[in-house]
Image (cartoon, rainbow, N blue to C red; front, side):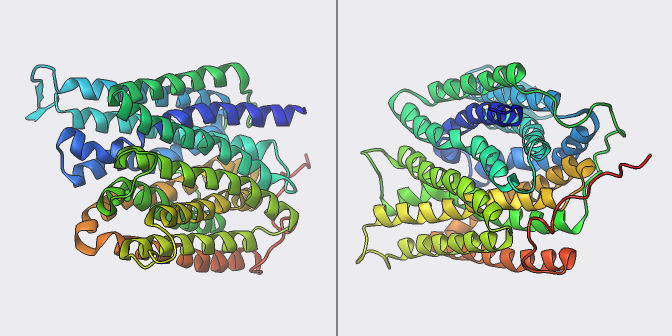
Length: 434
């Protein structure tokens, strides 16, 4: 195995274990309203807190990578995520503690500690995402970049489905606290693994100082960011935030589990489909020598998946498939659409971005994704009572379609073609003259 392959393997392994920890907690967090007796809006705040933190942390994280390199921010980010996950256990215990009042706020309320833990997770994940994609860019070439981005993105999410299932099962058979301990253990192990195996890839000397407003406003970054916004608003922001409630509303379960446990299984289906298509979509964009057709195709798959979810809610699929099977098919399609977009999308951004701005571009792209993922729960959860689950999922089907239009427009403005080849989109080489 070459040194570049070993580096990618180390990143994938580290992000797998932190993703496993993240997956364990996700079937539980949307159901905090029942666990803690809090409002859907506050549940949405807890779910979105990490993403709103990344809105201000992603750009500095990317700039930091361009200044000091990838290794230290990657290891530190993973460690912060592990500590944040352990904070969920503390949050559950705070309700039993004596009153602690600060500024008129009762800090013994578990919801405040959940929000604090999610804030810390957001800081850590901003560092992890910016560094992981930058490492993949540093060790890949245009001809393999789509596949390499798919591999790294797959590593970030591949642990998630196993964690989703385990989180739902452990929380139901043991306790929510036990599930959180499992998540924290895996997340902390990821930081140790990264410290031992991930080298520096990006810079040899420090560059300019880091500024929080130092975002990348180039057309490729804004274009890819718009696609990222639409996909993550629908996928993470809406589907994952509402799935446990949807299952309860239509009385669907799998393997004898309740809505919380079943939601973990269905989420795992979406993420497994996403992981497979991350690799396939990235490789296809390399083989076809253009990323755009692959991106458009998978955006279309996502549209179909959300339309099928809306049909399940109305009962339109009942004569063909049982609701449980139809829901599974829809989750496969939505996951495949999101995953198939991920590899070619970040590869396209790397193709069109000079090396010295890679960290900033990846960080800015993450800002767009976190706006979408953060707004999703805040908008979708309260609107469920107004327009229903079918209305939410039908609206989500429109977002990938609009993203396709934005993609074509941005790529054409930047390259003069709606189907630029990876060779035409090669990153500018630094000036080698003295």
